[in-house]
Length: 343
Image (cartoon, rainbow, N blue to C red; front, top):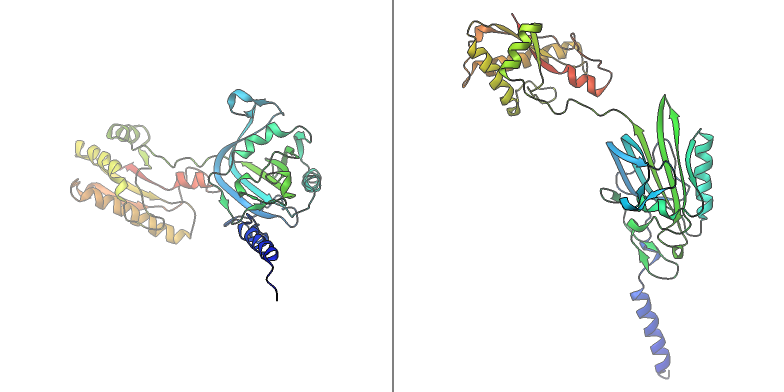
């Protein structure tokens, strides 16, 4: 066969082009981001991949009250709707060739049928509002891959929410007496050259913060005042592992103040009463609360405090004397306590 330099050059060019090609079909993501899932309230558009995901059990987020943007505040919403609670955010990448309008209309139709009260709807000139959502990405779980462009090149998944063909919808749904906030934005993924739709969904479920997670140790003066005024005082600075009775080292500050009170009043006698929430059986909680009360008394009787053990009687009452409802985490946290009770 006669050697033909021209064909060799063409072959080499094709090989080099394939090797240097900045994208391939295999680069497009095919699996959802680790730990991600559709929100139970809103399913994804068929064929989409959940490429980026974030869920926070309690955080603050903002939704627009209009299309007005405050440029002086780095493109933030003017007069935003501020919501605190459980926040779920999801980026979806659609199939090549799928219409962005079709995707948006399906989300819009589903939400409207579910009773969405529309607060903001934008279908033209919506670019300004999308900059708020393009800031998201830190703290997200991302899948592997890139967004390939039909003209060559690739874009990172974090740039999925583009500024071409932007449509936006925000409203509230009433669910079990609660207003759930939902925002949906659809765009061309990165740029129109990808010929793929991208969708960003944010859902905020308002709820109260779990309080009582930070406690202040009561000093000897406050302990004395509680005993004088109410005959008892609740202590939240005594810590135990879940289901265990060993007093944790973090309890030292509160133990110090209890010992200071008892040392300053040698005639003072007290009950040390352990309380639990209603999780578990009553019998097991009676045992656990008794063991915890005994552990506190033992800690005060030991060095360095050396309080006379005869001045302290330990009792456990499990969940029989709640100070709040056990129906929620916040109430259960208040019920888990040690009380100092005047004999």
